[in-house]
Image (cartoon, rainbow, N blue to C red; front, side, top):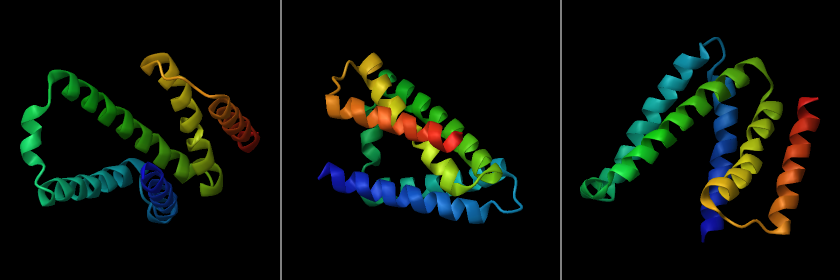
Length: 137
């Protein structure tokens, strides 16, 4: 079932790039990111409230809060740089280079989470890295 959610994530991420490129025309990319973030904030809290998940906030530990805040900071910086890149470049180039994050995530998951990587994972990461350099050059 995880792969269905992953495919939906990829689909909506691709729409994000297209909609963002159209939406940032003649708009400062930081302002556009802030507007997008407010929409995401509203949508995420609507899901939490609709599903009745708000009481779960009491169960979050200091560890949870620390890494959720760090994740939020990383996401915010990623979006700011992504929108800046979209404003300066073509979606067909920016979006694939942004997906270098997939290969970087594989590497970082080994370093920080001690996850094991299969030969298939390693080959996929190398191909992503190679494809990224082809697009950049």
